[in-house]
Image (tube, rainbow, N blue to C red; front, side, top):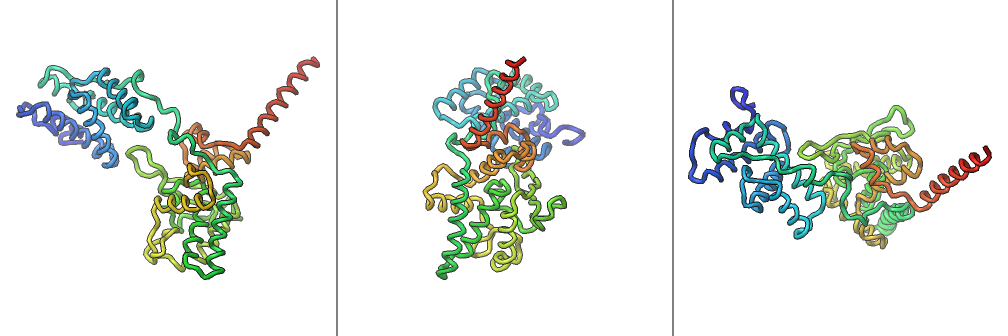
Length: 372
């Protein structure tokens, strides 16, 4: 709150009442943006970078419309959307981000709590309105709207990747070539990304201390659970945390071997980072993507495959193995089951098995009905 209980972002806090400006329209618009920024950063504790991006979006719409917020209309907004879709050909997720930014700005300047409506009426004889409605904005129906060719790895492809990565370690050790540590790190890192269903950023940010025991699965020892501290954040919020239960004994054994025999030789004493470069610094998500791409290309795998395909594969393979969908949803940190379903791309063999079961059930039901 501002002084004397005045809400952050209010017109009276960023615009001197009754003062005339040389360029009044520009001054009021700048004050609106400053008030919105203060209300979101100071009042709602949103990330400054996300707020900056939304302010830029509002400025872009203002420039495109050639009008200030108190002159905006749904028609002007529609024209901007049409331009973004047909001329600039922006992705649906980008379009939706722009729509959300403008809609939230309109909510702010139209709210009676911040006095911008009264300020505009006094200065310009009109006031802002909400120009984004359910009729001219798109709904968020699915979480993933990227390249539709993106897919999980098949089980055979995944096994080829792991075998090749392990082979790189063996060949370097046998011949005394440099790079054995990097190869060992990569082989274990890819297995962890798949076995715990992690994003590239999540796997890059792991510390050794993020693994801990699971009282309900003692067979995995100190690697029964994994705390993911750098999960995907909601817009403007901090990274989300989640705990992921270990599902594969081979994965726990791979991490144990790496932590006990390799990591102590290369770690930086001032850091618990699990994956480090030859100089001991924590690797970045881009390095995970680059190394995965090198292995993928060496194997001649589909070029659309990325580290995220390991996460997709995790969801798909657990689904094929009959694991409860709600459990999978919690493992990967999705708020909604529909999001997890988008990650699922079951194999043809699995689909045929399920189809055969469905057909058999229908035929049996029809036969039973016919005997009545």
